[in-house]
Length: 312
Ligand code: NAP
Image (cartoon, rainbow, N blue to C red; front, side, top):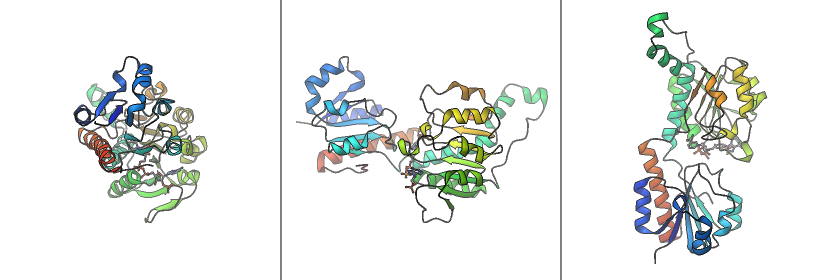
């Protein structure tokens, strides 16, 4: 009999179909009576598919007494209670590496878009202001700036290697120095003081909650910019909104927000901010590769009791 798998969402239609052909697949998102399903079928479920964005509904794993494995779509796992999984012997996998290029590209794209004010420029041309009023106001050059990366992991290093040809100097903050030539800061305020652009690329979760706060933004200063492709939780959003409103910093490029998709509407008021709706990994190619890795992890578990990309 094939393994009973509970998919909390449809990661990508073709890959969900692939799972349905191999496994006894149940779709949580399509269930009318979730409680009745858990009562009747909860004990049969040994594998669960979710995503970094969807996470795990509170208490769900307690209703799946024979759950062995969770395969998650996305690299971040701050929305999954890893300690609870570890305590219950549930293995967890994610989808690292396959999304690094697109997310690093997005960090670079937002950096350039924010300093060069691409959205304002697009509107200037599109609305006819160019013809009516002449050239748009001058913008700021990326070349020659100091880029401070918060979290020099896979994505942070991808951003650093892409930023170097743009002529920026690179520094970084993390829990430990890496074997790289970039300047290491063991203090985030010191990194912000040094940097012109603060690029947030660390994991979310309790350890990094609100670490980009008012003192960090003040240290970055009135000509400084923040780019966040990590998690909205890493930035103290009310402090960021105050800093943008009061000219404490010059601007921000944001892919992620504290409350998604209901982001704080205050961000929409600033023409110094470039917004992107958590789409850093949102290309057909990368989302397919992520979905394939979800399937590969599940197959590896089913066939060999191993995970390709384990978290725990
Ligand atoms: P990674 O390779 O694990 O890198 C994370 C880096 O952050 C590590 O170098 C780590 O360095 C550092 N770090 C960990 N805890 C920290 C802390 N408490 N304070 C400061 N730095 C810390 O992960 P990745 O693949 O680069 O992904 C990074 C994050 O990007 C993910 O966790 C996810 O939240 C986010 N992400 C966003 C998108 C999107 O669509 N916007 C897509 C993919 C990923 P040390 O261990 O030396 O501190």
